[in-house]
Length: 175
View 1 (cartoon, helix red, strand yellow):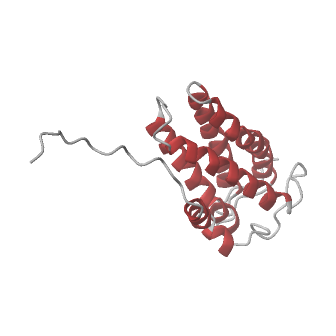
View 2 (cartoon, helix red, strand yellow):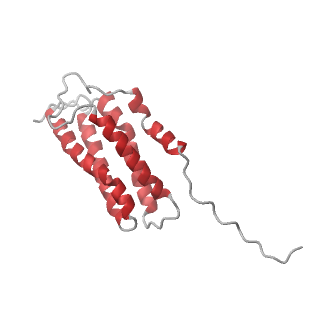
View 3 (spheres, helix red, strand yellow):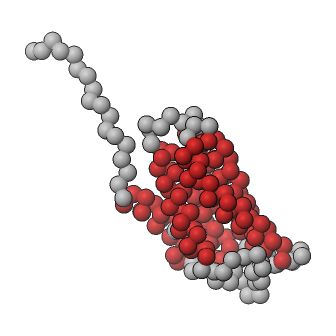
């Protein structure tokens, strides 16, 4: 027998393989792949502030890359982050909002819920950036395009909800 004391091996370095973020992206976009969008309901009038339709998949793909990139850095245990658990929870909520947006807007045809989803995404992302900026400015910068786009999209979504009726709630256009 040896008199040497046992020491645990050092922990393995944090590593994310290429297929893990890709699989996550496919899962959160699953309903969007099935529900191809278009007009939420007959007679829907898009807001004049709304960009052309081709802009949305390009922007959201780009924003998904930024958000996943920031999220990978967020879950890295080597980074000392005070609010990691809260931030992971808030990021999970934004992903749930993102994953269900096509359902509430295109499938259910609710411009009110679409506006609420968009504003909620903007508010939660703003909170995440404020929290993470104290500990890791690089993640805050990575997520900054999300608040720029969702801030603009919130204005468009609210305007869209005001100029259209909402068949889900049975409300008339307010403007």
